[in-house]
Image (tube, rainbow, N blue to C red; front, side, top):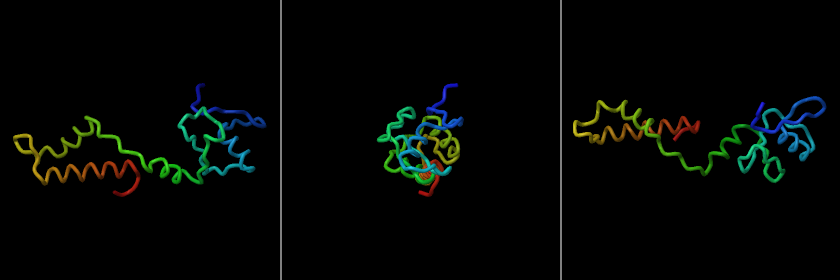
Length: 119
């Protein structure tokens, strides 16, 4: 099997190499909820300088999302939002102020769900 992370065998058990390296570095077993993050994003790069320990998945995710720019909406997503607002569009194809505000609210709601928090 082709695993994303390197797996090693220690005392007859399979373990992710990055978790083993971090555990040896800090001198104790890692807790199940602790996350070892690869700073450069390469799951095969298990140098200690590339590994960072987080106390929980929540801390890991919040650090990962901090400072990142949002991806622009895809054409398909913009089309789905537009379909939901089509009844408010004018015949000329221009949207009313109310329609634009609803569109913006839908976008904010979408990104809020993507981030897992509120706007």
